[in-house]
Structure formats: C-alpha cells, structure tokens
Image (cartoon, rainbow, N blue to C red):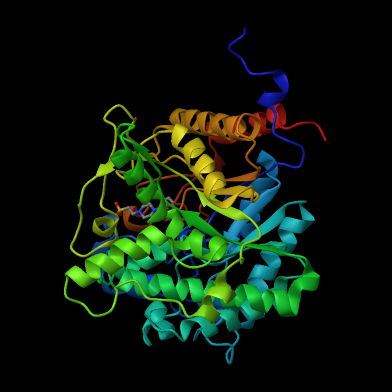
Length: 470
Ligand code: GBH
C-alpha cells in the first residue's frame, strides 16, 4: 500500500523513551500523614468543598503514598522506560522552608525512586505540580518575589537528596496553569486577579525556575541531570491564510507557550506580549504595565535555563483576531478569538477536543521558534467517564503517529513521550468523575484495587511493535 510510510517510519528512533505520568496531589493521598504539611489544594478544598465535582478532594486519592509499589508494578508490566511523578513540597518541607525537614516525606520519595530503579524504570521528577505549602501562600505565594529563593532552597535539598539517582528534572509543571490559579480562579489559591496576578505569579515562577537552574549548575552539575519546565498551551490553526489570522495564531502561541518558553530560551517575554500588554495597560490609564519587567541581571539568569523542552499537549483551537475574555486578562490581551471546530470529537473534559494534528503543529512551531532543542512530550492523554477506553486507544495511536511524522518528515528532535496518566486519579475540578488512566482504580475499595484497562494492554503491545529493536 503506497499510502503507508516506509516501514522504519512506523518505528520510533533508537533511544526514544516511553513513560507515564502522575502528580503528587492527584494520586498520593496521605494528605496529613507522617508530618506532611497542608498544601494550598488541601486547604482550599477543605474550606470550599463545592469547588470540586461531588465535593471530592485528594485527601486519599489513589493512596499512592502507601500503594506506590502497585503503581510501579503496573508501569513495569506495561513496559514503560520512564515514570514522571512530582514531589509534594509540603510533604518534605511542611512549612515550605528548609529549617524543618520531614524525614518520612524524604524517605517516601527515596522509596519510590529506589523501587523504580530496581525495576529498570527511570524517574522523571517534577518539583512543583501545583501543591504549594500553605505557609508560603500566607505570605502571598507566587505573588511574593521571595518565593524564588524559597523555591531554590527547596530545589537544592531535592537535588542534594535525590540527584545521584534522578537525572531528569522538571522544575515547574505548567507555569501557565499555576499563574492561572492567581488570575482565573480555576485552581488553588483561586484568586481572581485576572490580567494582573497571573502575570505577577508568572514572573516569579520564571525567576524561581532561573535561580534553581543556576544553583543546579553551580552545585550539582557533576550529577549530570537535565532540567526543563513542562510547558503547556493549545496551539491555534489560523482560521484562514489571511495575514491577520496567521498573526492571531502566532499570538495564541506566544501568549501561551511563549509566555514561559521565550524567557528561558530567548531571554525576556515574547516581544508581542510586551507590546500588547504595555499598550493595553497604558490605555487603561495605568502608569506601569501589568506585565512586569525583568532586570538585565534577571534576564541573564533566566535565559538558557532549559536543557530540553517538556511539552504537555492535549488539544488545539482555530484562531482569529478578536478581543474576548475578562477585562483585563491574558486572553483579552492576546486579541485572539479561539474556538473549537464542531467536527472535532468531544471528550469528558469540556476543554479537550480531539485534534491530533495540533500536536504536530505545536512541535513545528516550537522548532521554528526555538530551534532543534530535544523535546519530550511530558503529557498527552484522553479523558472519559470510565466508558470510552477504546477512544483512548485511538487518541494515543493518532497522536503518536503525529509524533513520528514530526520526527521523520519534519526532522524535529522528539526524544520521548510520557502519557497522562498511568492511573485514574483526582482530576482537579472534575474530581474522580473524569478519568485519564491506563489503570482503573476502584476508589470504593479499601486497597484502591488497580486493574489494567484495554488501553494498557494496547500500549504494551504498541511499544513492543513500534520501538526499534535496540
Ligand atoms: C494537565 O493540565 C495537568 O498537568 C494535569 O495535572 C492534569 O491532570 C491533566 O492536564 C489533565 O487535565 O477548568 O475549563 O478552565 C492540562 C491543562 C489547564 C487544562 C487548565 C484544563 C482548565 C480548564 N489544563 N485547564 S477550565
């Protein structure tokens, strides 16, 4: 069949790694076990249970705090080479500060890492997947510039403790989503400082990342680890090929991925963000821009601080010119009207339509903007209500085909893929109603019984078939 690509192109390149992801608050439970301090998610959901479907929270979740060996067993059985998880900052530092270290928390992650390594699975570790220690939120959280030093002290302890065993680090998962917790109200701390708090939080997230990276270079470069952030965004296809629509699609990229990627790869914010936000701020009668300025020293510190590019991809949009969204807000500042194609399949998550071509679009755009940096897809997955596992298989199959096309037809340096998620877990505002896992969890059973889904067996087979024999 001449429509098929050459046989080798159905394979992944030598060294390509497959993995699966989770995040601490979504799977661990043990919210106050053995000296763990509360995070902003513990605190917010205890105070505002109606924030989440069925008033659920992550107090127990998958109980991976006690059952992590079951998770590793599934990862091993399916055949993944890597496991991406996150460390809960308040589990190791209950006050957020290094003057009080919680030894059982330290031991927990050491056990997880040892269990992975004993099973031949490489850890990919995120330091921040949204669960800030409450005492740090009490001083303003990511709005307080001091957070950069506090994060760096925490990162230092993590590198010192685990860095001999962990070679792949993510400082911050989806800085854009973290900033959203200050700007949009959809995530803890659920502040609604749209168009101001989000930019300020984003600014300090970048400062924190830059400082932590430089500290690693200075103190731990002998460990030979590789550091990134996990970037998120949904790229836009231009509605037409008109210059206006093409420019709008570019702004869609710059205001999402570019917001954090441009500073760490090119120094400073994307020029178009600077221009639009400064102009809007002025028009609003402000004498300072809502988008903070870096000092020259900060730009030098932040520029060049990712060794690889972590890409979380789920969905895409059509885009055209248009000021929509709250006033002010990042959406409105971008002057892009983003919308879903009615033909793209819906899923259990209203924000996620299935459009695999968007993954290749994102990869192409990343290469165009940032050159041939190695890219690892750090998240990609399909949500259902426990009823559409076949569709999950289709989602993976089509997205992985786009990755192969990006590698072989576009020459893009994609070196790995971590799906979301190994296991059904606490899906933030959707609670336990929306499931992304390859492994089903009986949340009503005392031992949170784990059962591999069809998609897990499909993935097992897929990796065996499509990985070049090495
Ligand atoms: C990722 O975020 C997260 O890293 C991960 O923890 C999560 O489980 C996974 O995706 C699946 O959701 O409430 O309608 O305003 C993906 C990006 C950003 C998508 C926030 C949902 C809120 C949509 N997410 N967004 S809405």
